[in-house]
Length: 328
Ligand SMILES: [Zn+2]
Figure 1 (cartoon, helix red, strand yellow):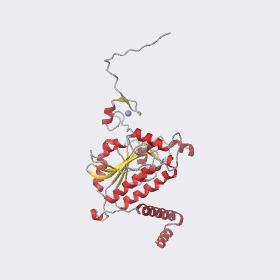
Figure 2 (cartoon, rainbow, N blue to C red; figure 1 turned 90 degrees about the vertical axis):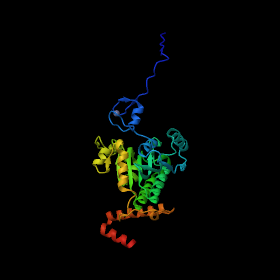
Figure 3 (cartoon, rainbow, N blue to C red; figure 1 turned 180 degrees about the vertical axis):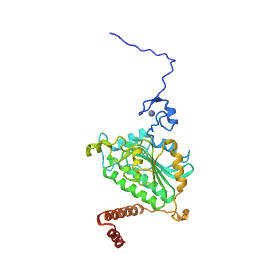
Figure 4 (spheres, rainbow, N blue to C red; figure 1 turned 180 degrees about the horizontal axis):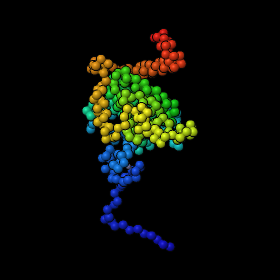
């Protein structure tokens, strides 16, 4: 019987760990790629990065102060698929080092103070469960109360199936959160990172004052395979890409990662903390503070405006506006 034995010199230099680009297949040193903001130095492919790396890239060094990290997801449905939901959460927490799929707090970007939150796709696909929704709500509430711009980096697979309908409710809740920011006239900037899909792209992420994305990011509600199978139509090869969304007017810009911080900082400097409409900016005396009724009020207002829109379509604008007058 032939036996193969491999020898290696003890002092042989080990082969350095090489990183390989998933798009162009070229290799490089992992440290070089990380220093290049996790963008392939050969083809410019933007790799997915976690919330902590995103904060390190965008926020000024040492400026980020995390908030709302004490919020924890319960298991309202007692959900169990291949493993119980609490166990799946613990796994995700251990792997990612995060408590949930979003990290938020105060920061400054290019010396412009703001409320900043970043989602992490590696945490259960960045799914928007109840804690993600609540942290976004509190970020919006803080932006409104402190009259600061709100900046969110959104990356998500959509709803979190383990929380069922409660997860779907976060779409309405985060949309109402945007209303809080709007009413306080605080700017809201969203950066869509690959992938930004499902309930996140269908709620707060598309409601920002300025909505930008990274090159090559996939942004859609439903994936091309499901749409093609449902409609029996072939889709264009660039379906759902950031560049295609820009052409269709869904985005304001597609910004390479190297330019992202400078560009967001420019937006924040231009918009400052928002204005009052008369060119003035509120000081501390003019800041709005919201009580516990804020969410209920915002929900009622959004529901009211939705009813008005439906009336406009069904009844025609004149009658709808007349009915609105009677209601008020
Ligand atoms: Zn590459």
